[in-house]
Image 1 (tube, rainbow, N blue to C red):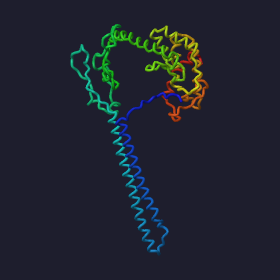
Image 2 (cartoon, helix red, strand yellow; image 1 turned 45 degrees about the vertical axis):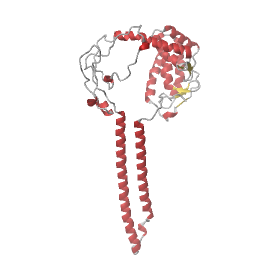
Image 3 (cartoon, rainbow, N blue to C red; image 1 turned 90 degrees about the horizontal axis):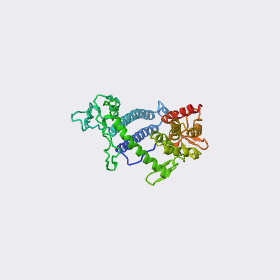
Image 4 (tube, one colour; image 1 turned 90 degrees about the vertical axis):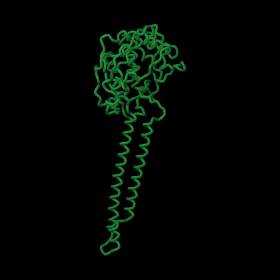
Length: 368
């Protein structure tokens, strides 16, 4: 089976999950009780017999028919009441379940202080706070974004020297920029407010890439993934050098040309897409095909284009469907494509839609 595009983390059940299970149990019990009552009434109705079989001269049968008609009317009323009561109970439980879900999703917006910058001594508050914004999904959807109405940004910070010692750096944690949480862009920026800081950070970003690529090269070069804890490699994507292909354009942009051309040599001389197991069409397209096309676009090296043509022609077999929409997984070696089991025969429009980026680019550079 191909690895699912969406991976889920498993952990302990949340309070909202427990509430949802409880509500499902209660609703199921109420429905079973209602069906039991209705079934009982109908069985009693059937046991009374057919009153139309009586004759006018048989007084005893006539009395029975009258009683039967009376009971039938009451049974019908009782059944209607049971169904009505069931609908009311189920509706109340669903409403309660909805409120519990909303509470579980509630977002507590802290009081926002815009002036945390060391050079800004003036007091001020956010144009909206927890009370005015609310906590539900509906409030979030109805919120009108605040754009540039709160003055100059206090978050520029200072440029870091290349000698900065990160060994003593303590991460400040999340939830430090709540102003942006609901889609707002409240601050204004000057033409060069962040240029110096951004340029100083480029040095450290590149160092992080050098460290990551160095470990991949040392422990897993040519393999799909590096496993940092065990300092080894893994071919979890069928052995198509996924990390290497996915990193090509980054190596080029960061001017790591020596590493880039080492990877190019591997692509040209050793890379093979004779993968015999099912792999994700989506993941292979955006990471492997996209990586090859980006590397060709930057460098103009035809080694990447040749491999992109090869991979693209293999992936294109997944599009051989009545609708023209691709199946979700494929054996690159044989072209055999199928739908991933967990999709239950459906297609993810987000996956299908995004594939056109790589295939349009492939069509452009090949003229096909």
